[in-house]
Length: 69
Image 1: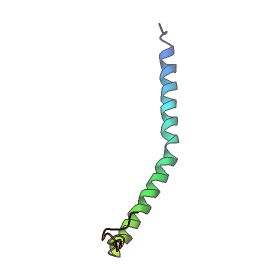
Image 2: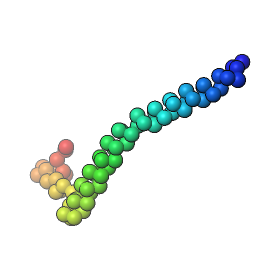
Image 3: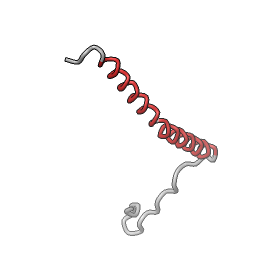
Image 4: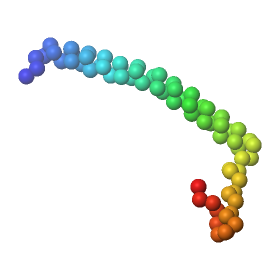
């Protein structure tokens, strides 16, 4: 059985480990946030230029179907 004086020490260790994990996730969150801002800007530019996608593929003269990709 764990003695009564060990509970505060274990609580401090677990609190410090949780704080460390939270702090170590900040750089990844900042990177992901910047990436999302970049994607949002790309989508805004794409909508502003009325982008409709790639041009349709030409059909094969023999079969009349699109060329295999």
